Length: 373
Image (cartoon, rainbow, N blue to C red):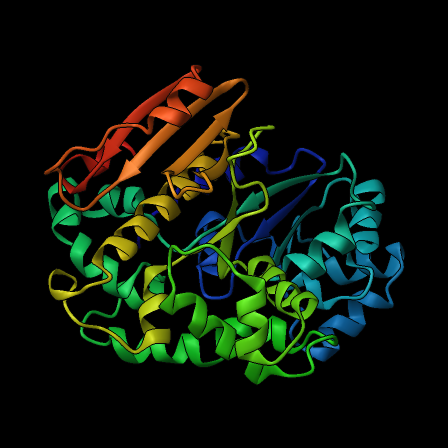
C-alpha cells in the first residue's frame, strides 16, 4: 500500500473532541487512507452517505438515536458527507454531546460540505485536503531514482491511485474517471442545466493549458454568458478537478490585475480530455504539461506541509511574465519552470525592480525534487 502524507497528521488529531473533515476529489483515496488509519481498531463504524437509507438515518436522528446507532463504536466515519442535509449540525450534535465519539467526515464537493459545516462546526473541526498521489509519496514508496525515471510517464498519465496501481491499464482507467465519475457532484448540482457545456469547457481548458482565462472567448464558444462560464469554472474548482492562480499585482498600472490561470490537479485528466497519450518527449505541449505538473505538486506540498503560501502568476500588459509567485507574508518566492535546464532564464527585470523582497529559482527536470517534495 502506498503511504499518504496526511496519515500521521490525521492520527495525531484523533479523539481530541473535534470532528475531522477530509476533503478531496472523488477517487483520490480518502476511503483507502481512513481504512489504513483505522485498520487496527475494531470500534469503527462506516456510514456511506451515498446510500439513501444512511442519509435518512443521519438526517432524522437525535443525539439519543445517534448514540444507539453508534453502539460501542468510538470512531464513526461518514463517507461523502456532503450528501446529508444539515450534516454540520449533526456532527456538531455528536461533538457537543457524545464527546467520546470521534467523527470523521469525507467530502468530494467543497461547495456542499463546506457550506454545511463551516458555521455549525466553528472551532469544532480539523480540516484536511487530500489530492491524487504526489511525487513525494511515490518517492517514499519506491525511491527517488525510480520515481524520477517515471516523471515522463506521470506527465501523461498522472497520479490518480487507481491509475498508478494498474500499470498497463492507464488509458482505460483514466477514461472511466474523466468521462463522468469525477464530475458526479457537479452533475447533481441543481444549478447545472447544461452538463454538455461543462464537458466542452473542460476540454477547452485542457487544450489551452497554462493560458489565462478569457471569459468572453469561453462564453462565445460555449454559447453561454460570462457569469455561467465563471460559475462552471468555480464548480470544477470546488470539486478539486482544477485550481486557479490569480495574477499578482499591487497598484502598478502595467500589471494584469484580474487575470486567472487554470491548472489541473492531475495531468492524466488533461490528456484524457484531449485524447492525447503520446510520449511526452514528442509533444508540442510538453512545456505546458511540465508546468502543470510542477505547480500542482508544489500546490499539494503547500497544503500538506501547511506552508500557507498564496499562489500567483505575474504578467504585464506587454506580456512580460513570471511562471509562479508564492507569497509568504511580505516575502515573494518566484519561479521559472522549464523542462530543460539549457538557456537558464532570469527573473524579469520589471518584476525584480518593483518587488525587491523576492527570491528566484529556476525549476527544471534535473532539480525537480528540490522543489516538489
